[in-house]
Figure 1 (spheres, rainbow, N blue to C red):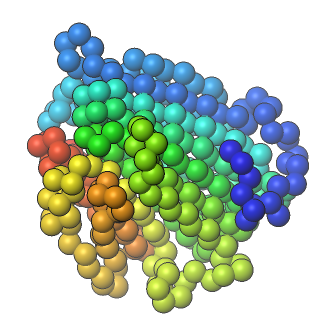
Figure 2 (cartoon, rainbow, N blue to C red; figure 1 turned 45 degrees about the horizontal axis):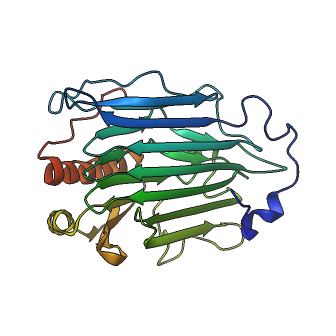
Figure 3 (cartoon, rainbow, N blue to C red; figure 1 turned 180 degrees about the horizontal axis):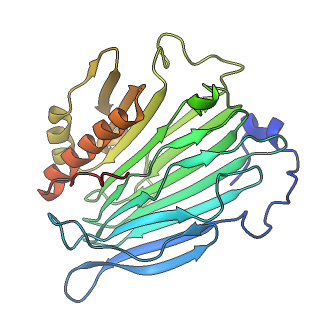
Length: 297
């Protein structure tokens, strides 16, 4: 990943060199249909601290669906960590990917942590990517770059959630920088959209009107799907604003799908709303509901 200009002030060498064991996590998962037309995790490559053990089939409403949980053996992300994830879903295959717990970003002094992701979906493929929230500590510095390559007939539900910080430590928007970039294109190279957010609370307060306001958590759901499904999903998701939450939804460029934003102050409530959006997508595209989350999560 090329270091963007906004992160250069934080690019001083970390105390533990980049590339040492445990600091360059890599995960490569590929899903395809087997001879019985069941989706399976055909390709599987991992490098600690990113860990995936195996796919699970526990969804009673969709027993053929492989569910994968990404685990981390390294604790919070620290300065100098460089992680990469690559997910591919073959023609007509499907999968659900989540994380086992929230991702914590530790306080950083000399460098930053990064995540580079790539999603590839072939024709009629279906993927849900629904990780737990990211929690930035005071002086955390984090950059992510997510690239999506998707066929016109495929569907991707991509979610990400960011908390204000560790509230029980009195940390609210005390991180140094979050640089978040997401782009999408077709298999033939046609560009669909590119979005980038740079959050630097100490330089540009983000609690004002028109940004976060009085809310503490923001979640984004990208729904890349054919126009027919997009219109049905759009009609079912209600935009609203109240003291507890704000929900907005709009169309993405080039008829490639929808983007939904959720703001709130209670992580459990935001998570339930986000899962509700995911369930709406699954119902419209696959005619199956998203099951209730496990009570211990």
